[in-house]
Length: 116
Image (cartoon, rainbow, N blue to C red; front, side, top):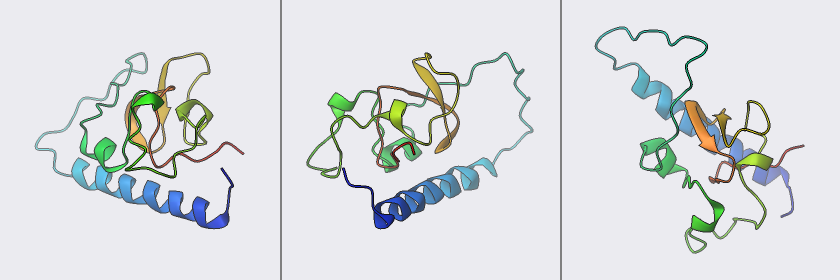
């Protein structure tokens, strides 16, 4: 997959839109939430979560709908995405696109951005 400025800017737009949606939904809490302890692990991202659905997130790249996402490139997955965070070796890690959730390193979404 050729990396172009248009591709990078398009992916950044997707990330910003998803983040805005997540942040807008966070403001509707009725009561203050307890702060999790640093040792508490974040929950895994549900593929039915609205943000996940909006970005076509799947836990395994074999599940990518190639008709719906023709720009998917074989070999692209969360583990080689710039957005993935956390410690290498973990099967589920934090992602800057889905704050507070863990994504599968074998997964993919249309916010995938190649590591630089």
